[in-house]
Amino acid sequence: MFTVVVANDWLNDYWAGGNLKQSTATILTITGKSDFFDSANQEVKDAVNEFDEKGYSHHVSILAGILLAIATPITGYLIHGFIGLLAGIALGAIILRVFSIRSFRELNRLAEQMSVPYEENYEN
Image (cartoon, one colour):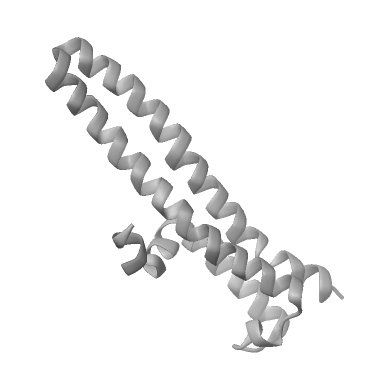
């Protein structure tokens, strides 16, 4: 969790950078302002705040899933040898899917959805 607190901006760029930059570029194109958050309506502010709030928990889930997926096969091998290694790989794949991949997809979905309220309100 300390890593997420210290490197939150970097993790946002790393996990959802493309979608986040695309949403930001769309918003800046529509508003033409660099202070779009202050001039935005409440729906847009809520979308940005939701990304910030949920982004932290998704970063923790992604990193925890990766660490557990690595540690599970090693622990299985140390406890039960080759059979433990195979069981650890299977369990690690499930953990990676449940924690990391799901959170990665949700984080990118939130980044994509950030510009939707602007697009709906300022469509011409």
